[in-house]
Image 1 (cartoon, rainbow, N blue to C red):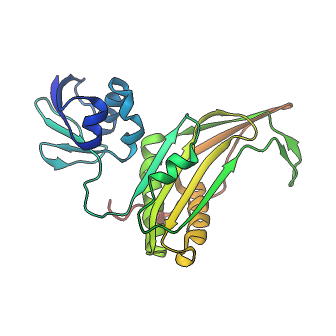
Image 2: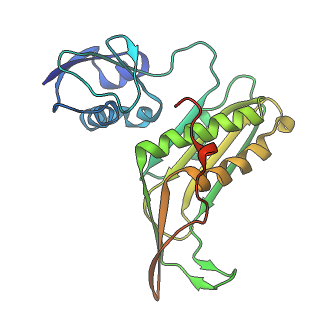
Length: 237
């Protein structure tokens, strides 16, 4: 079936089109459509995690099913002073400066960045060597839960300006950054340190990401011990 896709602002610039007709299978969800657009126009992949899809001039969730003849619009968050927030699940290398640039405002005077990385040697508890880690993610849900973590951070530290949560997936060698939590604010006493710590702890609790550890003696999936509760559901659902 055919649908009409409109592009606006930075996405229009990157695609190079104002509008195009796209053929999609019946029953396609909004999230899958965004992935299809990323395949057609790789230049906008970096913006897709925060891109907004409207169907027939109404905002829709990722689970919304597209119908034949729908008018679709894809655009970045509308301008209006909303605090910058950035989520990404990616196989690409992390560029710290590029990520920070997405969450800095003219009023920003402090940034706290946490990055985890692959250890080649673990000394705690069961000492062992690691050849590499392999990360997997349930990507659509991971991005939604990242948004939940960011919302919780803003509730606890309302003076935060920008928040970035980024997770690498795929095969990662020792010394490679695997995850990044970044917070910006006007001043260092605005909660950026505490918020970054909360962000990484919360990510490990509710964001569906898993890692397989491969070493000289074999491999194993590393599982956590936290079981989500009713309080871990998003309040807007």
